[in-house]
Structure formats: structure tokens, C-alpha cells
Amino acid sequence: MSDASSVHISALQQGDQAAFMQVFHQHHKPLLYFAKKIVLHHEVAEECVSDCFIKLWQIRERFASTDKVKAFLYISVKNACLNYIKSPHARQTFQAEPTEELLSEQPAFFAQMIQAELMDAIYREIDQLPEKQRLVFRMSYLEGATTADICAALDMTPAAVFTNRSRATETLKKVFKDRNALLYLLFLQWMAG
Image (cartoon, rainbow, N blue to C red; front, top):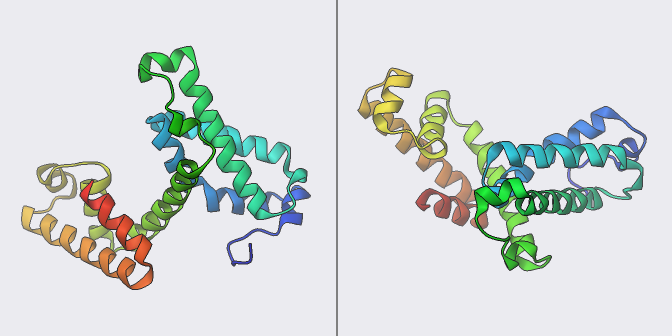
């Protein structure tokens, strides 16, 4: 990996905590999104992801490249999530066995991995919005709050909520359309879903 966000692998191998934290910050959000698509519960997803970062730290010397670190993290998170789903405790929640799609190592897995990374890019752009737009957008689309709930929480009128939500949506559409067609399509799909 040659981009600026990649960590120098030898620093990670030697136990540099700053290098490890760089890996953590780079991959935590996409991995969490990926895990939540499988286990459906934020707390369980967070635990699966955290456990995989602990494993990464314990065997950090084994990785020759950042691509191998990334592959390890995604495969480990997927396996941790599947182990949770198969557990007796989870069977009460899931009512069914994991689907073949989840058990597959092939295209569906990689599509979910890419979608998780694209969602991370969307969340980073949401964080760049002006404060009121960001708050209204997050409450509307990420938390599912009603206009009345947002008005009460942010001390805004319904018109102000609508204006901030519309401006945020238009800003994000423009950013994604100008920057990356795939992100734009994913954003539109996410907004519709």
C-alpha cells in the first residue's frame, strides 16, 4: 500500500504503539460497519472488532505488508462474527443458521468489505459538514429521529431542521458525485434505504 494513510509495517512489527493506533484508526470504523452487517448488534460487533485488534497486536510480527494486515482484520472479524452467530447465546437472537453467503469466502465477503470501506468514506464526509447540518443529518439518517425529536433536541424549528437536512444532503451528493461515482451511487442507495 503506498497511500499516505498506510502505516510503516516495520514499525508495527517492532511494537510501535503509534503505528498500531494508525492501523486502528484507519480500519476500526469500516470493520465495525462490516461486523454490524453480520451480527446486527452494535455491542457484539464492537466486541468482535476489538478482539481482532488484540489478536493483531499479539501476532504483529507475522505481517509483511499493510495489505496482509487489512486482510487479516477482515477475515478475523468475519470469523469472530460467525462464531458469535453459531454460539448458543446468539441462536436465541438469530433463529437461523448463518447463510451460505456469510459462510462464503468469495465475492459476497469482498463486496461487504468494499461497502464497509465506502461507508467509512461517507461517514468521514458527514463529519466535515457544518455543525448544525451534521447534527440534523446524523439524527435524521443515522439515528432515525423524527423532525419533532430533532426540533426538541436541538432547539430548532421544523423549517430549520428541513433546511439543514436538505443542505447537508445536497452537499454530500455534490461531494460524492464530483469525487467518486461509486461513492455517489452507494450514498444514493444508503439514503434510499
